[in-house]
Length: 139
Image (cartoon, rainbow, N blue to C red; front, side, top):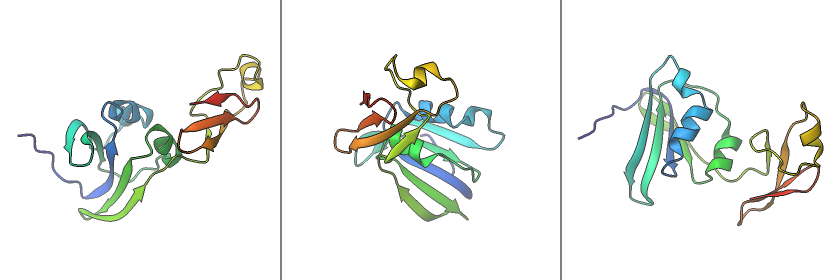
């Protein structure tokens, strides 16, 4: 039996789609952390069958838009004294910046290096985004 203790103060990123936990772990640079972190892969989930979970024994700033873009079903639990004091249910963000890049070779972002890659959500049900500069669709 695997036993992972609860955390006293920090964050739990829960309900991550199976297989996506390692990508989020690396994106948040948790492999460089000097505090306790746990990545649990393929945990049993009553709702979804399987899920990944990340436990962080520290309060850190995380990019909720990035997490919502990667998986809008993620829940972020904020822990104090081993009790959940806040639960944040993520959704697809209305805009994303520098998370994805435009694939249109004629887009200004392909020519100019210092331009922020900005995408606007155009269809929430299908998860479609449009490049703010050239209207290239990203799904």
